[in-house]
Image (tube, rainbow, N blue to C red):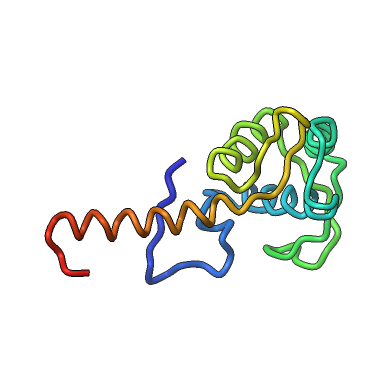
Length: 133
């Protein structure tokens, strides 16, 4: 996944940097809250239940953004698109980890660590090219 941002207009919400649409932002944030609410780790079955509730339009939440801010709403999001556009990118970027042995998903700090690593790589590349940084 490619993250494009304008360093002079970085939004307050990190989800706005990572995801392209308002709907993706809301669903990714709800998934994160769902995992945190479940002690930071959920089973593969619990993830499937979350995705199915979204698909069926029965997942209820109080939103913290948009025109329905502060209101309890039912969210709807296609199950296949959830896996393709939300969960898979979050796993690929290190926001969520999947443990193959325990078959669980959990919140990860790998994303943060990788962003620091990328910054250091950039600094090293400049140094190699002769810039004094």
